[in-house]
Amino acid sequence: MEKKNIDWSNLGFGYMETDKRYVATYKDGKWDEGKLISDSYITMSECACVLQYAQTIFEGMKAYTTQDGRTVVFRPDLNAKRFADSARRMEMPVLSEEQYIDSIKQVVKANEAYVPPYGTGATLYLRPYMFGINPVIGVKPATEFQYRVFATPVGPYFKGGAKPITIKVSDYDRAAPRGTGNIKAGLNYAMSLHAIVEAHEQGFDENMYLDPQTRRKVEETGGANFLFITKDNKVVTPKSDSILPSVTRRSLMYVAKEYLGLETEEREVYFDEIKDFAECGLCGTAAVISPVGKINDHGKEICLPSGMEKMGPITQKLYETLTGIQMGLVEAPEGWICEIK
Image (tube, rainbow, N blue to C red; front, side, top):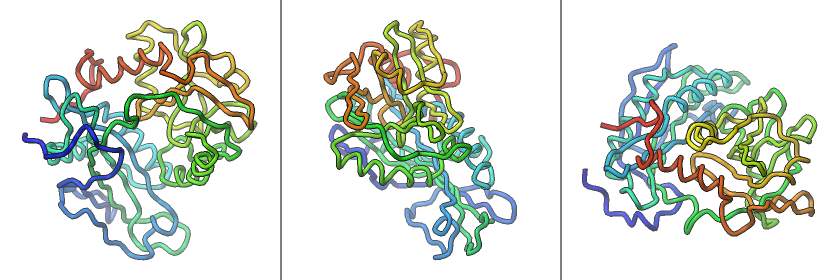
């Protein structure tokens, strides 16, 4: 497959229209077979449920070119399961895992010329999403839905390497107790927009959200889970019913235990503990791991021993091992890599 004439090494993390996208429609109680289309625009009623009541969910994932030239997608089965969980919580029809994975394969294959070459640091970002499309004026779920997948080539999230960031403790709540924090609904991200703009205006890179019930426990940021490394090299991640079950975070915890031989623990993490950790990182699809150097608690700075110059040593090993698996440099656990043929 001949690649598009794109300056891969200078791609930003933004949208670039590609040739094909996938669309499937749910109507009269069932999904159609779905198909690839060329038109990137969506036509809907002004009263569509998604526009009135934000009935929409999404996923984020990537396709890569491995060292030996294969095109692969990382753990799409986990994204499919999370997408189904999100649909159930939002009163939306569940798309089968088979159709979800098939749609991903079709979109990557149809846009393979946009999958960046190995070694450029760029990837093909995939955005599966579903929304209620029929007119709804009373507060109730839609009865008709569209499921779509588009692809866009993106550069590395951090140009020039991942430098540690500074985050602040937010005064806002990201999700309510027993709310929708554990699913990937668009409304969760809408809730974080004001807080992230405010954080940027104050000179911070991200927010640290505490649990809304007690405001004593660490939850996550607006779009990533936390990983902490103790001074004796244990990898700890917060446990909460309102945290999104990140595919990247779960993969990193497996890598820590099975590849690096480190002790791992998923548990409630109290804010008071942070000063005792050696390293901190934010994990998600876009950046894999973003190292955190400082946490600002209303003017009081907590400086991680790993510093502001580079990733901490354990965070670096986790990052290198997981990206090595994704790029074919490190042997992957069974079922983690889905090859596009």
